Length: 427
Image 1 (cartoon, rainbow, N blue to C red):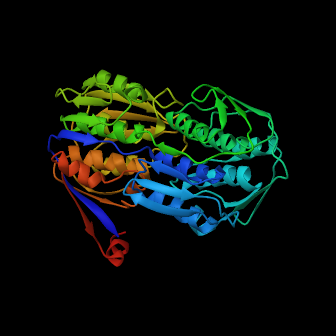
Image 2: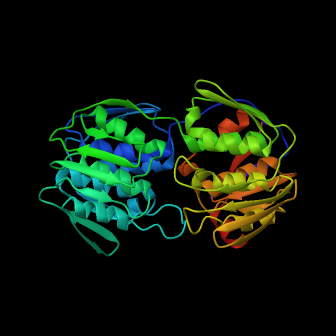
Image 3: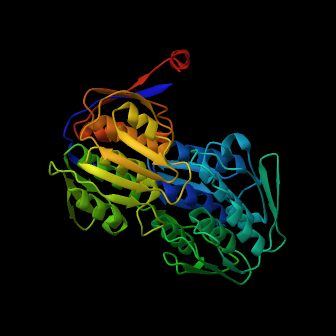
């Protein structure tokens, strides 16, 4: 068991370069299966979710070679299995993308129900609805989803709710379906556009990604491609909030500022100074943090994956702030950890009311999920005293080299190993 030890109270300053988008990468790697030739994927993040995706690809029969620390060559031409084993799938929510990829590739898929962070009910009914509309049969037995189709055929699909995973999964399967598929009420997140661009680079015919109507005309052949993944919108937003929380001055390089407009607007309202450049953004604390209201929404609204981080920032602000979580049911579990550090937060269903105390105190806490873990880091950096964060494996699922990057900005953070029996005894 490993944990982070953070001595807070330092103003972080300097430059940080953002890694590739986790949410793109975990969909693009399965998408390679649709190609009839090898692909080279550049700017791949070095995170545990990618390690898991590589293991799944290898078990399916793909040949994966690391050309350098951020470039993979994936040869999917010798796929010999249609099954993503439970032990692999349970560790990664995005394992469900292998459903659409395998269904499009070989007409069948046997994939374990996805795991990942516990954020409440996250059903895949819309995914299955889309696959069924394309002509696939499905059964669910012993935690495995079995999909089969003799011939996928284009269809008109309307999602009952906006679903990022469902949009990408149907897009994957429809690439090789016969005829035209139209997805209405599609999600519009940047990583959906990124996945569509990758598929088009292999010869797919996808139009409208980034809007709420996506049209996919099926093709019979997808060729190899070399493609570079976009920067991580959520990692960039996290460092923007870190700058504000520590009253620091951080230049965040390698970003697409347009993807960050919702967080930029909120940070400016809270009191931080934000300056945009072509591929960078600078956030400077002003010594003043003001209350505000935040509501998570599908893109281009405020992203749910930055909700725990900005809630943490608002504990340091003056006045009463309200945060409404409109995407996931279970995203306020981390609030108990912030209370251990002196935060005054009350939660009623999907609404959190934060009475800004202006400061936090170091304490032993744990990461309940990936983004809650990032929130604990922000809290520890801003707090007086020492904060110890357990369950950091959640954090390392989605943030590449975060300890190294924070140290380069002047943070006092280190990772230590603790015997498992000691953790159990403390619990």
